[in-house]
Image 1 (cartoon, rainbow, N blue to C red):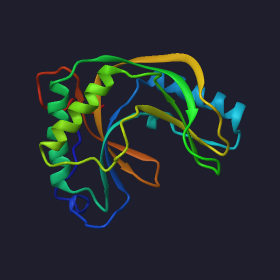
Image 2: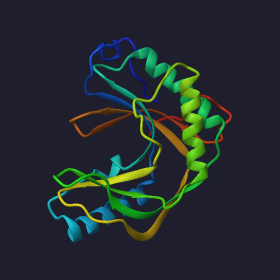
Image 3: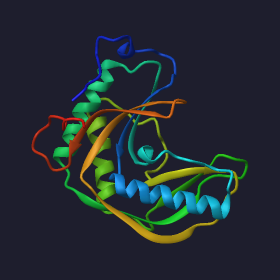
Image 4: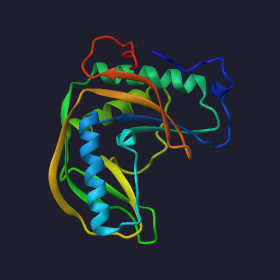
Amino acid sequence: MKLLDLNSPLSSPQPRRGSDNLVLLLLPPREIAEKLRLLGETMRSHHSPWGSLRPTDHLHVTLFHFGNFAGLPADIVATAMQACAATAVASQPFVVRMDQAACWGKEGGNIPLVVSVRGRNSSLDQLHQRATIQCSIRGLRSTKKSKFNPHVTLAYLKDSFSTETIEPISWMAEEIVLIHSLMGQTKYIKLGRWNLGTQSQAPTPMV
């Protein structure tokens, strides 16, 4: 597993807001991500052909947003990893099911096209709650203040449309992944991944 070099300039805390984003995600398996990408292409062609699609390997459900930094602070990364490990130990694999698509936002361009679950997924809600608690007891607070509304953003469109029911897309969520997102570069760096239900707090080796 390749970990962040805690002695590199990247790990030096910076007080100003920057382009280094630290997030905890659920990533769908490759075959599911490809289905989601195809759905995004289809819905874009029907509703807003000038929209931009998200890269297949960037499709995700966000569980916790640690913040934006000008260089990742080493202490926050280390603490985030501890919280991820504790969350994984206390959780079990479960099914994620997305069954509706909608545009979230107002007209004017860059409107997120998302798929989400109709109603609630109690297992997904509980995973988010566990992650939030484990981060909170270690002094970490999410920078996102809105209510947890699990979704996958497929594209950004110019034109909006009303909520539509889709053929359900499901997958087994078996791990959580800590990601360093380089904002503006469309680049994700996996810092660690943890299998749900594992009794080990060590990250799963990166592949």
